Amino acid sequence: MPAMNDQESIKQQYASADGLQIRRMLHQKYSINKQPYDEWISEHYRIQPGMNVLELGCGTGVSWADAKRWLPDSASLLLTDFSEGMLKTARSNVPDQPNISFAQVDIQQIPYENDSFDLVIANAMLYHVPDLDKAISEVARVLKPDGRFICSTTGDNGMHQWFQRVLGEGESPATPFSLQNGGASLEKHFGKAEMRMREDGLEVTDVNDLAAYVRSTISFGYLRDWPPDEMLARLSATAVDGIIRIPKEYGLFICTEPKKR
Ligand SMILES: C[S@@+](CC[C@H](N)C(=O)[O-])C[C@H]1O[C@@H](n2cnc3c(N)ncnc32)[C@H](O)[C@@H]1O
Image (cartoon, rainbow, N blue to C red; front, side, top):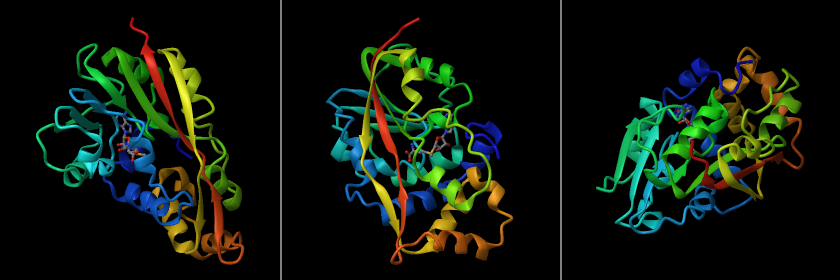
């Protein structure tokens, strides 16, 4: 099984937005917490007039579809991702307005000057980065001394582990950046890193949506050769009264006091 931060596999997985859209759809359709996940994250941004905001690994950009709600006219937002395919989708999802721009950027080498941004965002992406320490040091470098870094991630007791238990294959390599171990990586580069958890879970009623989720990610690439019926049977066997209940463990860190080198 390729590691979650294996560069070649990650580039392949995110060459286009198709797989990510399948996974996002599962969350939208079956999450118990009815506040949309994007809204929960965006509420933490607190973007003030005049602020400069950078998002790294922005993916489909769909969380900015209603940009006016979160971004004052006099603030600017730079949406970046290392995948040109993702940026293409992001451009189509985000309103065309003068204070929003796009660029292709790898978080491990951010091509902007020191102390440039008031807020840097990196959601659900740090676990994919091979040189995590370099990536976080780059974020601390481009943040203003009073700036904030917000990054969301998963925990070690969530969906991934549930799938592994149910499908009973493969050893799960440790998540390189999780709610459990992420704080230690962040504290090397920030004076403070506070964690916020989100209460949630999935109640899935159509097992085909789960099978599509499994097929959409390289993390379960080793299951591709399974007969589709066998996978559906294993997943279906976990249903109680027609509902498959799956735990989720998601949260974010809010980091301040970037340590400058
Ligand atoms: C799971 S998606 C998350 C997308 C979005 N942030 C969200 O929360 O929906 C991970 C994203 O990180 C991007 N990515 C992975 N490694 C990266 C790197 N080293 N630098 C910049 N972007 C990267 C991928 O192309 C993909 O769009």
